[in-house]
Length: 129
Image 1: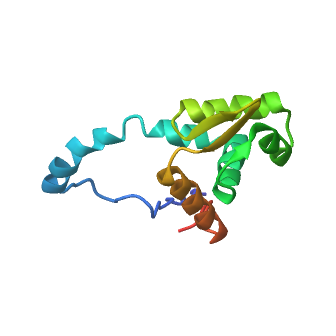
Image 2 (image 1 turned 180 degrees about the vertical axis):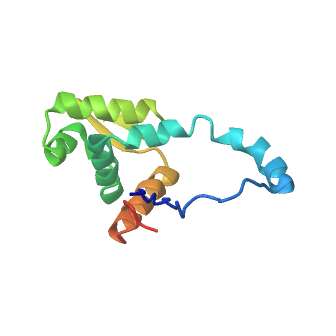
């Protein structure tokens, strides 16, 4: 008895290899501009840091103690994550006496987090088209 084989067709790849040389030559040199940008996404890929960044889109400035309470951590943990966000260029801080207040570095960071949240709310976050 002969076995039948089923060929699995992958619909999300090209069936033939070809490329548009003009497009490739125009885009390829510009692609290196993304170098370093991955660090922004790496910093925000941690759930705790993303929660902190999101909290800072809701409130312009938060004390380390406030952040710790919001994310349900110790002040040491909150400080660690805030420091990392600051070192990655996503947050800034100011001291007022014995208190340290953090805010997002600029409007671009605010927009990145806000757009990601909006995208997720629309249901396009995981596996969406």
